[in-house]
Image (cartoon, rainbow, N blue to C red; front, side, top):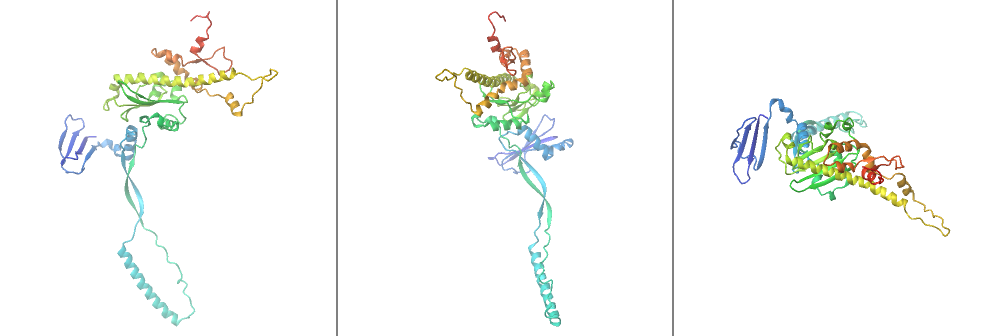
Length: 396
């Protein structure tokens, strides 16, 4: 914009004021609005666009910008849209009455002429047009320019709600609304961080490896992965809130402690952001640990089934208990969500073990390995379990 004009009117004041500043100028002016009291109350902001920036006045461009930066703002944002519509035209009442009177006169005149002809001609002759239905006149229409108001920020910021009130379908729907994937998320964690720094966040674990990550492009994957909001206003979606080995993590972070008017470079060096980064990594590790615990619970159930006491008959023979069909299917395919996820994302976790010294121990516990002690082809064990089974004569 070449110039910005802000008109404001306080409800308890009789005067409406105008603030005005030119682009690049270090000064501004405040005067009484020469238009008078046009607002009643409230504020009106006018951007005087440059000649080469007229695209920002287009409705589609304004809609895209509002959705991108203010999609989750609580205050509704309405966009005035215009379109041409075809509407029917009603004839003027006076013209209609005049035409009706004229039609009656002509009809009476024609009837008089016809009666004279009938007297001279055959009395049995029938007028074929007498019973003919009057032709319907085509409806007149014209194009009219109509205006309407469209609300552009209809999405809800579900991270501000209590997680007990949000269903799994809502979480999955929000995951897809982020544009991350058409498939469901494997897991997610929703939390409020409180302390010196307060922020809310939802972090998602994807089901499939992103294409850019498969090609080894970690920087491309981190772009747009985590969206940073300040009081529900988008600040950046190109922020390095996660280390490189967690570049596949998607989600949102919303903080009330960060300033709105700050550039990306300054924010990247902020101590607040570094604290947020540490807490986010900690929460991702917690999410992975909980997912891995589901596999352990499934394995424990298998062990309990194997060691279950059997019933014997009077002769000492084992009594075989028939299993339901559902139980047989469970035995064939018992879900192990973490192992299925780990097979796809193992390289990223191993990179974290190498690069992240502070979290190396926690990451190492999430690794899985093949072992000569495992019989099943698709069976893995964790590093702590591997170390625990070491013989006494084995050394570190």
